[in-house]
Image 1 (tube, helix red, strand yellow):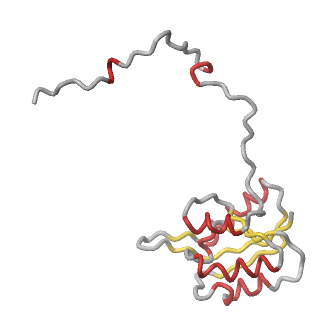
Image 2 (cartoon, helix red, strand yellow):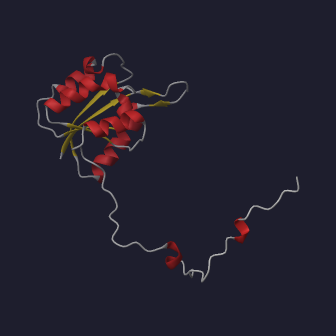
Image 3 (cartoon, helix red, strand yellow):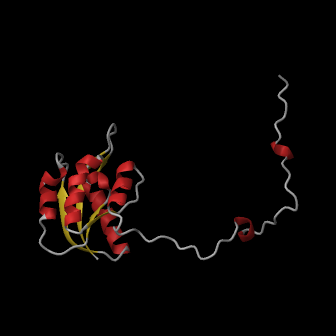
Length: 159
């Protein structure tokens, strides 16, 4: 699988926290290496805001002439935290038959919406459960012969 990466400085609203481009690149590189993804090009907009598809790095990314399957970002927030702002990019990628994949699994609303938009996008490998063993069996506990709920009965408080 071939990917293009994109980073943009992310400022967390109402905080002094900033996720810099270098941190994002490190996460993306690790994800790509772990999942056997070949990175064919890298693009960046350091702190650039405004319409997503009008940003210089995004324009260059979308115009990249080589073949690729995936846009790989550290988190979707590098574009925006609003689906309405990211939607034109998602539609452009859909026309190119390219998926958008995040190297981190966030569970915010935007990340969830993007996952639903790109149902065919690459997913991180999941654990396959081959056998379910109750915890008590793994640690040698025995099942009680009879359950005792007496301790759960509400005691009068003396009021």
